[in-house]
Amino acid sequence: MKEHHAKSHAEKKPHAELAGEPKAPPAGTAPARDAAAELAALKDRLLRLQADFDNFRKRALRERGELSQRAIEELVTALLPVVDHFRLGLKTAGEHGADPAMTDGFTLVYQQLMAALTKHGLAEIEAEGKPFDPHLHHAVTHVPSDAHPADTVLTQTGAGYRLGDRLLRAAQVVVSSGPPASDEEPAAEPPPANGPSPGDEL
Image 1 (cartoon, rainbow, N blue to C red):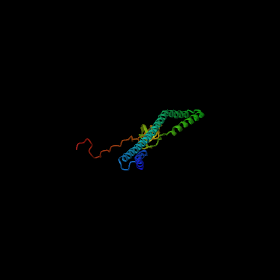
Image 2: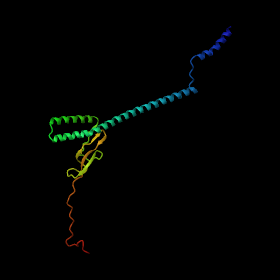
Image 3: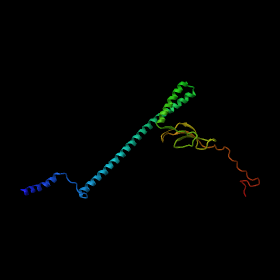
Image 4: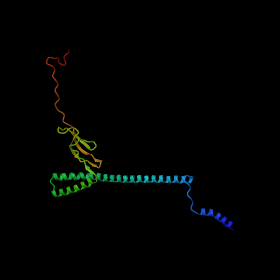
């Protein structure tokens, strides 16, 4: 009877081990190496996905900024003729003695418009008295000047503007060509008094 009980206990022992949790394979075995390789591949894939998402986020922010800047540039460029007419109208009103109250009102509106444009990066190009810069100035004509060296802006006939680092419109300028040339040509030296004349044969 005891032998039957011991035999039954020995037969049930493997079933008990099978019913329990599976044991992890020993380190260094093939399943362990496969699991480590799969974990490393998943980590690498996660890092790549994070890098791709970060690049996408930066590209989206850059493109959004470029679109916003382009929209501001188009709007400001469309308003430049309005600014020109405002300035011309105020100048004409001052020259013809317009009602000061009306002139002051339009001047205030003009200042508000320029303040709004300046807030978004618009800057007028100051050219008069400065060296001529073909990247910023458009030479309408060149005139001689005793007071200014060549390639110096004498007067500014049209306003130029920049938006940040970008040129929207070059300033129209009159440029000095330097001192005027003398009208008198130097007189030729007379031949020696006792020497042969140019047509005489030796």
